[in-house]
Length: 273
Ligand SMILES: NC(=O)c1ccc[n+]([C@@H]2O[C@H](COP(=O)([O-])OP(=O)(O)OC[C@H]3O[C@@H](n4cnc5c(N)ncnc54)[C@H](O)[C@@H]3O)[C@@H](O)[C@H]2O)c1
Image (tube, rainbow, N blue to C red; front, side, top):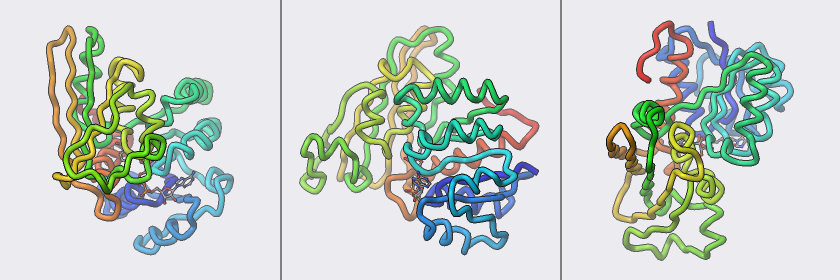
């Protein structure tokens, strides 16, 4: 049995924990959870019939006999705990992927994983097309652009809006609020453009991957359109995601992608690129 530890008991954590409990992922058990909000950890465990250990702090979480830690919390959590998890010889799955593009964190985590013999898993998240981008990058990509379109409520709280004095309540038509490289987009919208971070890691990197964020009051899904050109040809891939029931910022597909990645880790079969 693969023992999972979960950091972050919000939308993604809840979908994931329920999937494990329902037996959707064979050979996996949820051993421990940790959340800076004890209330959120307790709310999650209350709906589970097999109760994981609720860790009162990160140290006691890490001391649990778990094989893999799933981070479904925040960029801060990846920065604060990532290296310690790998040093404790536990594999790590990261959902707050934007953290990896900042302050050399990806390089530090890769070094730690190498040194302690662990793996780092990054699910495709809320987008399709990562398989093709990975393969296409081998021959050379000339251009990768992602346009993320969200209802204004799904962008609330992004630091960039304050910096630029953008009032989402006043947006009545689809409006481009950001255009720039993925490297800057993940700071500007830490909870919204993890998909751009995944895309840049799979393709041509954080400075060359271009990101456009559109606040669109006419839609009720989170939409991502990826356009890429290179020696392989051209691709265009659009995903229209329903949000998780309790968090308009998070696409349901992101949680499903985490579950599927976990299944791949626990399974003997590897499907897809
Ligand atoms: N890769 C993707 O495609 C993708 C898609 C959607 C969301 N995400 C990211 O995944 C993460 C989780 O998303 P969510 O919708 O479940 O968020 P959420 O806000 O519903 O839940 C996050 C939970 O993590 C806890 N938390 C935050 N920081 C923490 C820390 N430092 N230590 C311990 N607990 C902490 C919070 O208290 C909360 O309970 C977010 O960072 C989000 O941006 C990634």
